[in-house]
Each structure stands twice: as structure tokens, then as C-alpha cells.
Amino acid sequence: MEMNRPRRARTISFAFTAVMLLAAVGCMLAMFILTARRAAMEKGVQRAYFWRLAWVSAAVMGLFLVLLAWVVVRHLRQRLAPARGPTPTPYVDAWAESGRRMELEEEDEVLLEEEENEEDEDEDEGRA
View (cartoon, rainbow, N blue to C red):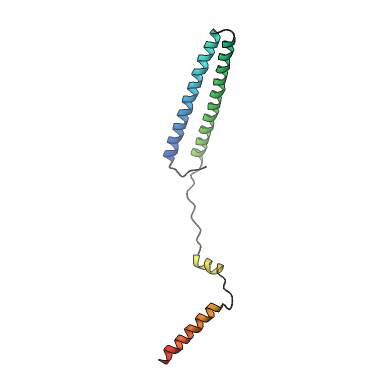
């Protein structure tokens, strides 16, 4: 969805999102390193649990890297795209369009009565 925001606001939004994703990648990398080191020191079941945690943190870090790549590619695609200005609205004669849409019956009783009343009034004014 394209929002009509100024370029500066989009750049700030991109920078914030990219920094947050980089921070998340850094946290997952630190968690991977710490759990892998601890797994190397432990033996038995705890070693398996630490390795599993290390691999889960590596998978989450990979997911964050994919999201970061997607955000960067999207931002670059929007940034490098030619600027699109607003398109002018085509001119439409509203009165002609309403006249085209409004179709009266050939002999509308109300209109005929109004015309007769107007003719009668004109005759009365002419006599006076």
C-alpha cells in the first residue's frame, strides 16, 4: 500500500525499521554465540538443549535478515522509481451530464399543468 507521505517521512520510517531489525539480528547473534559456547562446555542433555536453543536463535536471526533485505529492497525500489505526480482530473460538464441522465416523459402531466397555469397567468396579466 502506497501512502501519500513526504519522502523524508518515508526515509525516517525506513531508517527506524532497518535499525530495529539490525538490533534484533545483533541480539540473536549474541544469543547464538553465548548458547553455542555454553553448549561446548556442557555434557549430556543440557548440551543438546543449548544446541537446540543456539539453532533456534540462528533461525530467527535468518528470518530477521530476510525481513531486513525485503525492507531495503522495497525502499530502494521506491526511491529509484520515477516520481509520479498527481494526474489531472478530466473535465466533465456536469450540467450536460445531468441533462443526459435526466430523461422526462414526452407528456409529463405535472409539466403540462404548470405550462397551462403560466399561460393562464400571462393572459390574466395581459388583460389587466
